[in-house]
Structure formats: C-alpha cells, structure tokens
Length: 136
Image (cartoon, rainbow, N blue to C red):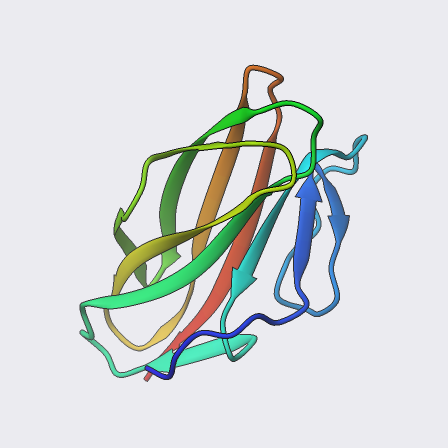
C-alpha cells in the first residue's frame, strides 16, 4: 500500500463538508468544533478477496477552544471487517491534529465500507469518515 497522503475529504461533526463522493451525508445539524479526515491516496481502494493486515489513516482535529478527549471506534460494513485501532482515545489541545490508524481485512468479492467514528468528550457530538473498499 503506498504511503498515505491527504485528500480533501472532510466531515465536520454532525455536519457535512465533503469535497468528494467518499463521505456520505449524515443528518445535518450544527457543526461542532471537531474535524475527522480520511488520509488516503484514493477515494475507493481495491483488495483481493481474503486480504488481511490492511490499514487506513484518519486524522482528528480539535477545532474548539478547549482541550477535548475523543473516543474512537471502527466498524466494517459489507465485505470489510475492522480489526482494530492503533488508539482508542485521543486528547487534543485546541487546534491540534492527530493521526489514527484503523486496521482492517476483507472477505469475499464485493464492496464494503470502513467507518471510523470519533465521539467528543465532554462537549459531546460525533464525527464519522468512511473509506469505500472494493474486494475482487
């Protein structure tokens, strides 16, 4: 897998600011001071059936005025299974950004999604970013 680089797909907490088809809209609500980005070199990735040991890099940015802790969760949908996260929690000062690595594997041929959720504490709210995966 080539080294990840940032693409302009950004999802604001419970509000959408997507620059590409990668991120699906969530219920539109007032944006909160957190961003969750997907840092990949493609909008959709492809893998052979049964591939394991795969990873995707996401980034969480605290856009708020206070230090915040984020609880992170990963889920696979369709032919994708999330195998874990490098970090389950992050604490970020205002304006800081941290990378989150999500590990995943794929099953039989088809399509799926890898979804990362960041829940902000203590202020609440969530952000989600999705990586589309094609299994061949």
